[in-house]
Length: 254
Image 1 (cartoon, helix red, strand yellow):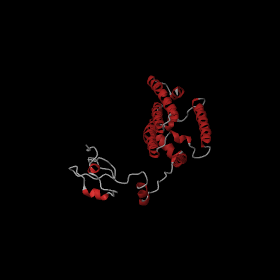
Image 2 (cartoon, rainbow, N blue to C red):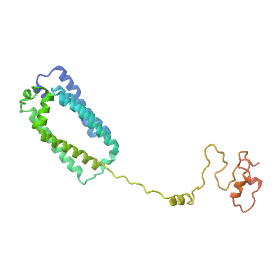
Image 3 (cartoon, helix red, strand yellow):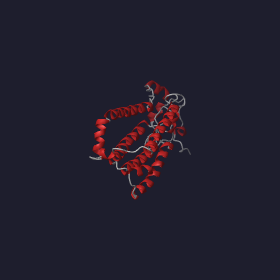
Image 4 (spheres, rainbow, N blue to C red):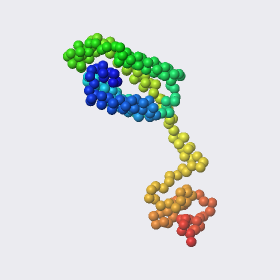
């Protein structure tokens, strides 16, 4: 990066200080994005790196691309990534499951190839290649020069790139989508059989604030004055008449 600053012109003290402060932060964010186990934390590390890159672009007399990096990529696209991650609810264990067979190997090879292309292009840019025509392109202003070239000379490449980005976003959504298994609706007959199954308690339990000496269906009900309700005795089918001691509430025997 210092070589790039030198090629752009005289490096001031402020530019050098900004670079030496933000360069380690950008590197830490890039490493954290790769090593973070949580997808949301990985996206936040990438936001840190993108913010640092936006400041670097502004230092290189590119205010338009610097603000686009901060506003569009960091502010809009990364927030969209976070929304999608929270929407689909992926975690670290999902990375162990391959939706397509061999996708890890293909992704690794493509990543190595892409890194090689970037390193080659960067080496040529900071090496023997000399920048020509920057003054003429920015004669009317940096933003105006980018708009003129983008929508005239490079309009086809711009539209193809946007189509590729949309296709990649839709493909990532499809690969990350997981069909949720809907539970079968339990019928009333099945609920009845489960309620009256052996070992289950079919009767409702007493509500909060209601005194009950026992939850047994064989115990008679009590009136507010703690006397036995006669109608509750008729619901029972005893083999003999209950004695006074048996009909009395538990804990009141003498």
